[in-house]
Image 1 (cartoon, rainbow, N blue to C red):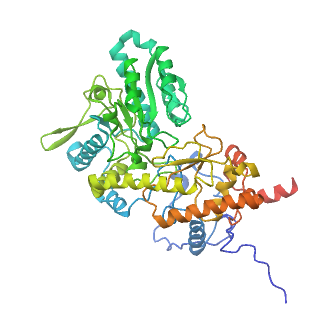
Image 2: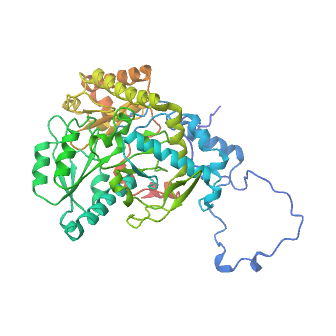
Image 3: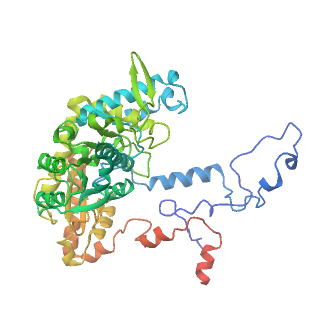
Amino acid sequence: MSIKKVTQHPSQNEALIFERSQTGRVGYKLPKLDVDETNIDSIIPAELRRTDDLDGVPEVSEVDVIRHFTRISTWNYSIDMGMYPLGSCTMKYNSRLNEKVARIGGFTNLHPLAPEEESQGALELIWELQNDLCEITGLAGISLQPAAGAQGEMTGVMLIRAFLDKRDGEASKDRRVMLIPDSAHGTNPASAALAGFTVKTIRSTEEGITDLEHLQQLCDQGGVAGLMLTNPNTVGIFEKNIKQICEIIHAAGGLVYMDGANMNALVGVARPGDMGVDVIHLNLHKTFSTPHGGGGPGCGPCLCTEELAKFLPVPHIVKDGDKFRLDYDAPDSIGRVKAFFGNFGMMIRALSYIYTHGAEGLKEATEAAVLNARYLSHQLESDFDKPYPADPMHEVVFSHKKQSKKGVHTLDIAKRLIDYGFHPMTIYFPLVVEGAMLIEPTESVGRADLDAFIEAMKDIDREAQENPQLVIDAPHSTRIGRLDEAAAARKPVLRWKPDMEASAKTA
């Protein structure tokens, strides 16, 4: 008795939907026409009609489609399954309540071109969120127009440019240097360049914070327009000299922009405006609930001091009595940076998040995020090289220095984590740390999950010492092993062709 070989096991493999296609199989059946069939030639011009008869569209049944996509969905890792330890990303759990509020019909069905009198609820929501974010940051001016963190960052730098041009007039053209620490996010120098500035890099100290002496030297060279600083910085350490840093920049005639990507370590505890910061952007899709990642959508509000508020993008939301309106009368504004008014769904979730937590809850979330990172730091510092001894804030950076002696590197450790059921941490960033592993547990992770992650990391370290090849060859439990990621990014295969496999065999 012969047994047919099963080539597609539903728990291990899944054919492409195209490969499941069988001629004549359909997932629907329409009733017969009860009217005369119209001659399509008389309706649609020939040049607008397809001629390929939709060749290649898969012919599958409804059950084929449902099972195909359900199987694939079970292979995805999500925040509902476990922690995302991605450093500098704040991949926290997003409560279903905020998602439910964002789906209220009056919000989701509001057309962006609806007149102001029909949009009062939305305008009031934005108004209230603006007030709350100003209170959280200690800054007076705000625009919720930027669509993402990088755009909010660019908007902030454009405010600095507009302010300097207004203040210094013709002389402002000689003030075109933006200072950026060597541990900054990669978007910082890009935003500075887009706004017309050149970049000079500030060194970090052995402690991982801004080198004040080098900062002063760069300021003494003149032409400084401002400083772009992340605080806590990208290695997870709070810039304890932040007030002194701001004073040095202000004395040089520049302004201080703070990258708010790491506000998850400050909300309810410290306000950038009180530190001397002039401009900041926030990531509502990191710090204030909206799911982060996957290319968007995002929301990157830009906040500034009262002195810079007149340069913010238009329109501004103005409250007249009990009514709200959009005000375009702002001659010094940098103009629009996005059509309409940002991504409104992000604003709904953010306000829901703030209202749900309240002042005490926001502070508690921040403290839990910092506590989690410090607990993780303390538990792993004997197994992994920790380049900076200071206690981290909401994220901690390690190096592969100890494991690399056995030939095991950061990428190997990250891939092996997949076998233990965890999403890998951020790797090879920040660039100032060789073989960096940047880990941010967020406040969403409980003690049991933290301990499980710590145990997995310790096991991987032990494997690296006793059987390094096991880690180097990881992952072992996935359907696909290691890919040539560089080739996949540069030459992606975006269309399936029926003869692709046959062509590969004959090549």
